[in-house]
Length: 132
Image (tube, rainbow, N blue to C red):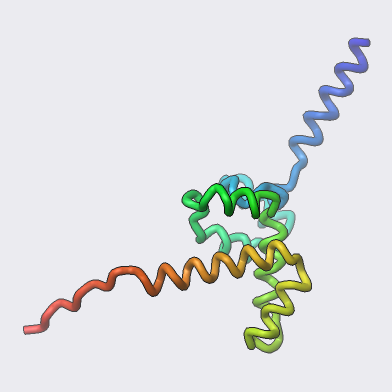
């Protein structure tokens, strides 16, 4: 019985240590160690994760967290990669490339883009300093 418990404990430990950080929820921050592991194990997605990390998700509404909580860094990075690799950068082709990847992740990336755009246009503008 003790051997069985030991085997189960070791197996659980091995499985938990081997998880890929790309499979974390987008609402859980990635550590420097996670980023190093992604760069080593998934270099093709690393830059897309770096781009995505620029968004601050800490202030997202509970509704957004509920709707998009199942999304992982991998799913979002794949959508961003599809956008970047889209041959024709027209909105229609970008939307098609996004939806072919993952509908929920594409919806979330669109949500982020719209949030950023609306914030950019509503942000107070600094008054120019007069030149003498």
